[in-house]
Image 1 (cartoon, rainbow, N blue to C red):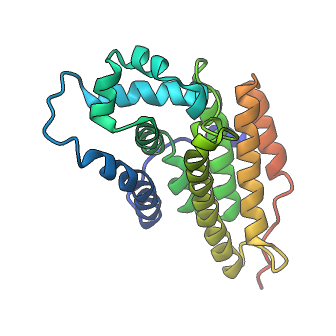
Image 2 (image 1 turned 90 degrees about the vertical axis):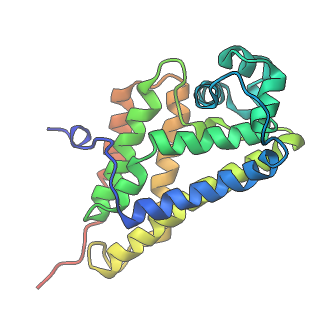
Length: 237
């Protein structure tokens, strides 16, 4: 059985998951709370969660700047003033959508950190990323990559927030590989920071290629190639 068939997106109640989700909550809620403070008590005639799901799909497909308010209004089925009332502004809506994306679709990242070997960690991330990036024909790739690779000065806060978001994931992965090195699962010559950057670079590249039309099979092949040179652990007496 090919490696990719063994990796499935499950949820675990563990310390790595708590660390991950707490970081995401800090990312999204701090900004949203500022916008929400002046909006309490206003009557709403729509389901906020449904609107958030619709906005998530628009941002996933078009990115932050590519998603216009007309797109968001059409997808959500509510008027622009209602979106302002519920979320404050487009940036706050994007941050909420990104947090929802993380909660619903990126559970495999904290799962991976819990696995017993560094290679299993990397494989779980790569194959699940291949699956997610190619799962939905109308919004391929990764929302955190599609969101804002480049943009105008006005979109700089969102671009920087996404950089910080991706850096947090890489830092968690680096820490896990440092643990693997200390335990002998990686050789003394291994560089945990470089390995973490490598895994993230491959997953980001797969997201870009999925957006460009790469198939799931091709993305799996990329993951398999990346894992073929994974460093082995120290020999044990």
